[in-house]
Length: 265
Figure 1 (cartoon, rainbow, N blue to C red):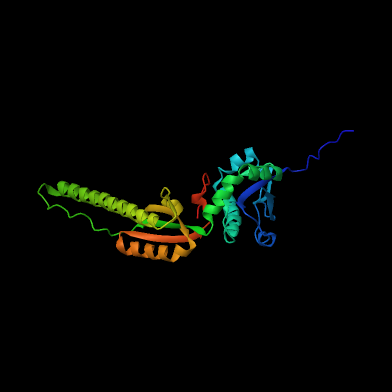
Figure 2: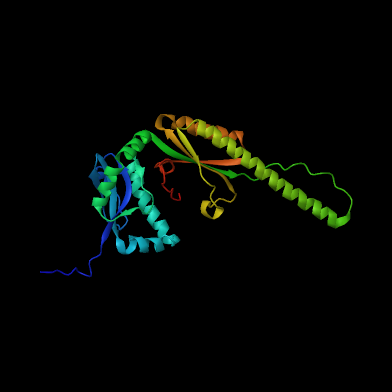
């Protein structure tokens, strides 16, 4: 006897949010997954992978490729993914999954846990008791320009060219000063962190800031050292008035797990 599959049945995959040592079902009940439904833990090899249902009509390979080109869809997906990862991070170390990691089913998820057990366990050990903090540095307007050369003769046209040259020189000098300050700030903060990453500065359209970003740093900081780290940021703000420094966190350790993409935040 043969059977025919119901054409209305939608295949559902497993969107991976992150891996932890264990997951409390009661805590997971407080957050929605990618489809708005519950998240769940897949346990194997002494670890727990937290996943949510991902209908393959939207999250399969081909539709996912198209959706990732849709900025509105991408933002919604990133926020939903981050909400779950953030919840996990509040309870202990978590290895965040790369955005849009979808397995065919829970069996594949369990196989991944078994295959990568040593790597995942080592990463969880390294992240225990530590959190990611972000420091962004923006150019502060009003950096004193280089002294302008005395005016020379040549008429109105020559005077205009001299003024324009002075403006460009002042702008270039300000950018150089800001870049050097950003490098010094990052070096100082990295020295007080377990690990550090310097990401590419965000475009103003993404950062929403009125001036250019020259530092986009991420720092893995032990819990006991957070107060001192924040004090150092304040000290560096006073030491480098040409920059406006912004401290954010703690975040899940997106920047310190190999191959994971950090969402906009």
